[in-house]
Image (cartoon, rainbow, N blue to C red; front, side, top):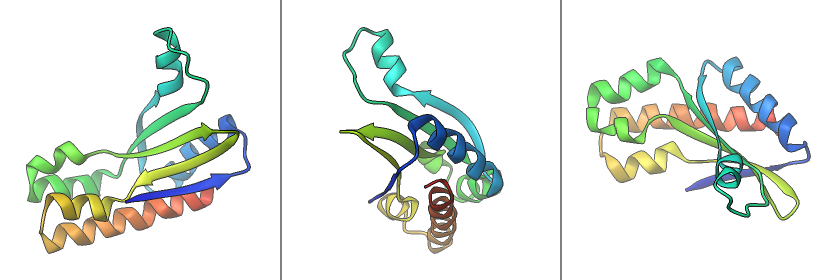
Length: 127
């Protein structure tokens, strides 16, 4: 269900490179949630770093919601850059497996596989 890769890059550089790779592969970054900052602002002793990038390809998203509107709840895709015990990771939940749990539509499975292939490429370009 998870696709996670380790990178030797510093956290900030990995985030910048991810944002560029997303754009270079026809996706857009809708928003970035800085989970670490949010928790620390609420006085939670959170030592790690974590940014969650919500990314979307409008054409692919349209194929999904045009077929099954309720699947909007699974959109957009999320790619995380995070630290854990001195290492930096980049990962996401696999869209094909997630969609398989939510729908049995063959056309949508194909869309999810295409999205997963692109997001895997994005992570590979970032690492």
